[in-house]
Every structure is written in C-alpha cells, then in structure tokens.
Image (cartoon, rainbow, N blue to C red; front, top):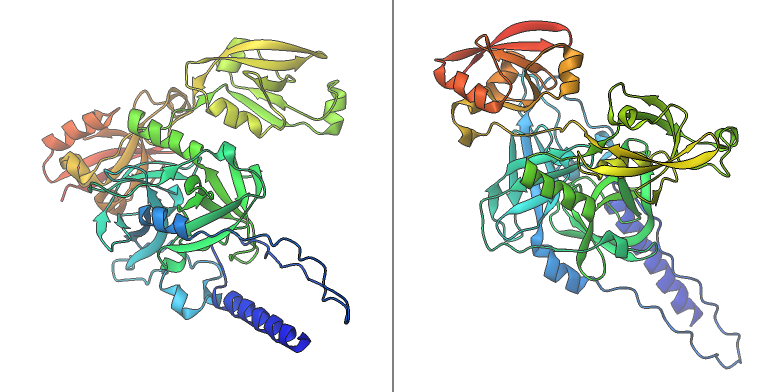
Length: 488
C-alpha cells in the first residue's frame, strides 16, 4: 500500500517536472503552483475515519469548446531596421520556440534587413469582424494578419490604438464570425478561477488557467488601468488574448507580466474588459479615445505629509503644480490642495486620480473634494481634453495621400503653443516612402509644397495636385527642414 503510494507520488512529481522543463515561459507572468495537501495515512490496525469531502477542480472544456473559436492568432510584419535589437533572453529559449518570435534584422545592401515577424493573440467581439488585441502587438506593424481557428487568414486594418491602456481595435472583412461573450470585471473576486486562451510561442488556441491574485492593481508605468492580477501562465504570443471567468465570459485582456528572466514567474496582468470596451467605443464613434484632464501635477501622500496637512491618515493626491490657464486653475484649485475624491468616489492613492479624471468626457462638469487649510470643501471643475494619440490614418483605400505612408493627427492647442506654430499635424507612424525619406514618429508636418496643412483632407488635396513627389516641411523639436517624398 505504502510502496504503491510512493511510486504514484514519484510519477506525479516527474510528470510535473517534465511539463515545467518543456514549457518554460517568457512574455507575461508566472504563477504559483497549486499544491495538493498531504493526506496522512491511517495508523495500522485502526478504522479509517470518514473521508473528507474532495474539492473538485474546475473543468474548462465546455468553456474552450464554446469560446475558443472566437480567439484568433495575430501575426505582424514590419520592415527590419538597423536600430532593431535582439530580444532579451532569446538565446536561452529552446530552438523550436525561437521561430515564433520576432527575429533580429540582418543588414542588407540598402541598410535594411528582412521583415520582422511577430505573433500575438486577439478575440472577435462582433460577427462582422471587429477584433480586440493589445496595442503593443500591432505597434509599428506594416502588415497585420488575423488567423481564425478554421485556418482562414484575413488581412487586418488597424482601426485605432491606445497606448495608455495598451488596447488596439482591428477590422477584418468577414461575416458570421463567432464572437466572445463579454462579462463584467466587477463580478470577479480574488481567488476566482480564470482561464486564458492564446497563442504562446505561436502555438494557437493554447489554454492555461489559474486564479485571480488581486484586483485594481496599479503598475508604475500605467496610470489609466486598474489591472487584474492573476497567476495564469502567460507567455510570448499570449499578448492580446482573452481572460475568461468560469461562466465563459471575457473579463480581461492579457497584457503584461512581471519577470526577472523574461519568462513566466507567476505574475500576469490583464486589462479589465470594461476599460477595453470604452476604448473600442471611442475609436468607433470619435476616431480617438476621449479622456478628461484638469491640468495638475500630483504626488503621493505619505504619513509625514498627511500629518503636515492635518489629514487623519495618508490618502488622496497632493497637488504640487497647476497648469497655467488649465481647468484646475480656472476652478480655483491651488498648489497644496489634497484631492480626496471625484464625484463621490474616494481617491485613496495619487495613482487613482488620473484614471478617475480620464474616465470623464471632455467638457463635463465634475465635483472634486479638496482638503485645504484643515477642512474639506467641494470644487466644481469643467474637464479639458487629454491630447489623443490618433485621430485618423492614411490607408491604402484613401487614394494618393496613402502613398506618403503617414499616420497623423492634428496638433492640440497646447502643442501649437509649445512648438510656436499656428498649424500642422503630428506624425503618429511613418512607413513606406515617408520613412525611407527620413520622416519619423513625433515629427510635425507643417506644410506640403509650401502649403500649410492642418488636416488629412488638406494633405490629400495637395498630394492630388502633385506629380511624382511632394516637398514636406518637417519640424523636429526647434528645427525645420524640407524632405522630398516620392509618391511612387
């Protein structure tokens, strides 16, 4: 009896070790293993006590069968450039996995190497072909391809990206597609089981599972996302894939991991699906993500600062700077104010405030609870607008302007004042002829053929009147220069 138990234990341990060795991670986070508690054997000659109830582990098979077809593989390609670097830690990966990762460029005679290939995941949210994924999956891509579980491939158009939340919306030309069921992150509790479906290392429709480790987790580099932390195994290629609850509803998008090695270590972070759906709605309705702003610089309140300002405990966001002419100045906020709440919601930490303000629509009136001179008071503020990342894209279907290979957006009033220019558009992405001519993201296009431009429509008009090339006046920092771009 005892020998049989020991042999089984050894077999289980060996199988677990083989699994870990064969599928070592890298891309998101890794979670703690869920160990089975030891069960003491009854002493010889005694009657065994009544067996304790066995807690059954969840069965994800029905979830995978119903929702798996709506999860897609996303492959991207972009022209390799000399600045592209080797992926950290790739030399430690098994050879059979390296082919699924973006490969470093090899310098060619024209200074560019072959195209870089990469993989990610996504999921279909409408039967007519809208797909959600991570912004970092498609960032800088020249080509995006969506592969369905039935092996059909579709070229995808990037409708919009939002780097602040790491959400991107794609569109493929197809109909009657399977779609996921969207749930509510509010229904998720710490300790709940969740499952991820994606394409780690390009291995399509791979399922991993774990539990919710924490909610509303704030990360240092992200001010707008209250992440869902899990211990679900997430690896390269899982980015952009869905996180499901046991009801088969999407509650998040797998986005980040914490890792000291680049591999799975038990800490994965998902974007709550309600955050992603707001981004999707804004991109479809406005062509950009609308976020409120009040124009303040804030810092965290520690115990000593709380005592200095007469607070009962460390809480709120301390205003350390006010933008001149901004909404906060107009509302009468002052340096030294502590913002304790917005529209009745408490601000426990300073990192909570950007998210609360960003959720408001520009132009909306909000109530801000402020601690000043040892007393709480309410201040009304009219929200301004955070500059959008992207308004529109010059696409191949748009006619001649697409030959420039530029994705642009109009300048905001603040950017115009900073750059001391009354007009222009900001380059969000440069590819094709524009990139080869030396134009890059962050440049400001002031004029085409000496004609000032403020919009894509003006750019179209100038290009349509041009012959084989156009002279682009570029402002980069404080320097302006013309760049001739061939129209092809």
